[in-house]
Length: 340
Image 1 (cartoon, helix red, strand yellow):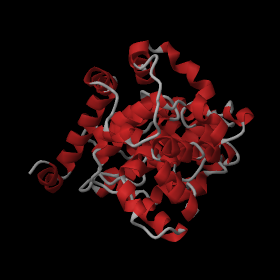
Image 2: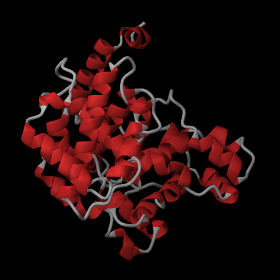
Image 3: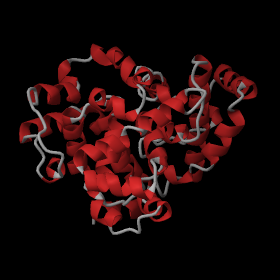
Image 4: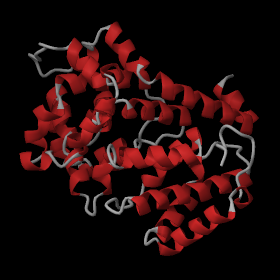
């Protein structure tokens, strides 16, 4: 089927051949996850561009269901979780059904693997990296959050949807996906940390109790300086790599169960396609002497390294631009809002 973002056609069942349609129906009948996937997809209206014709959106929702069920059927070791559809729909909107299926399957068996276990143990383990990262940069903020007993649950939806569920501007979502795809699987938790660190003053102005701090942090601002935060997340990853934080995050024997242990599969790409390697080379020999806010207020990454990180996602960035242009074609009013 032609990509709906690349063509003006409205996807309907008439585009399918009889064999594909029959296979899709059988898969829905056999899948134990179908009812939950159906409910989640029906609630995904806000993930589609404003102004998209109803028929086209409904066609894409059907494709979204098929992609999810097919990936799960091909990989029985993977377990569906609520929020997975938020990731899949992003790929679908950018590259269309056929390519999205292949990309989602690869990402699901690597970057997202920990979230798709039968239990949430590995997901919780990844969340446990959040506070140690904050502690390395801003001990005062860390201690305040610990005193408030806020925990890390506020960042759960950020992590398992790669922020797709909580950000309203599709351009920001796609930019983050570019970044996460080009980086280490644990990069989303570093990005979550820099959001919290960026909001230090707001957090410290809160009452020091769980309800107040959780309410503040769970309402993510929509006007964040994304490029700056992306750059700083890269800085933090280099200065405080997962191996350095593992003992604080959880027992060492649990660390090797995370997606980081499967990252070697991505080394088919050149080192120039791995920003964490580029940054490591540039920062070789760097030793952090003070646990202060200098990491945020005075980023140590020079301009060349920042350009390297940003430049690594140009290819997917082009796809992001294509889907934004397509969205503008669906919604003239939306175009005026984006480009006044």
